[in-house]
Image (tube, rainbow, N blue to C red):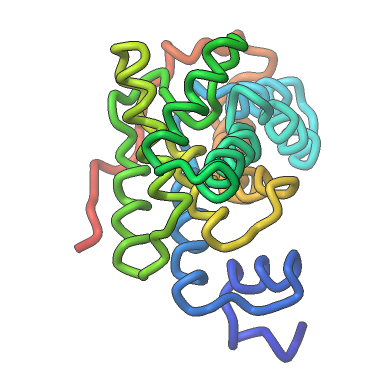
Length: 235
């Protein structure tokens, strides 16, 4: 590790640890964007609420972090693996069945609708269009990483609208899943990227809970008020 220190970034070391190889430069930049994308999303996500609740009871930092991580599952931050599975299946249809991207996407949507399964990585509780998805897709194009999986992700979004009349945007989980597919990451470990991304945000909520709030308080997300610096943007 001492040979890597000061020579590679954290996300590059992350990639090396799970694949055995350092990432291509463009992969490294996208991985960094992925880890930044989900650092925090306020106090409303279950992971933040769980971490704050455990911190409020007097538990140590590691216990509160563990609670937050355990709250990340199929419906919260855990859709990356599922979305990658759907995208892989859809892309396979274009190869084994000779379908176009659009027809393969329509087939996948139809199959999931008939089975009454929700396609992971689409739709969001708050965003009509997830701004993190837009930025990650923009970066994927800039870095030349855009390929068949990202094409399929967009095609499925369109097919969902055509099948239901509802706009179910690709959320950040779906966007991350599509990009990780382009990089050849094993879907079985894909959710680790969301967990690693969210960790700093959990630590921030836990620290605030421990240092500014009364123990054993009733935590209601709608009661939260931001008290930090005003909005700032990096130019």
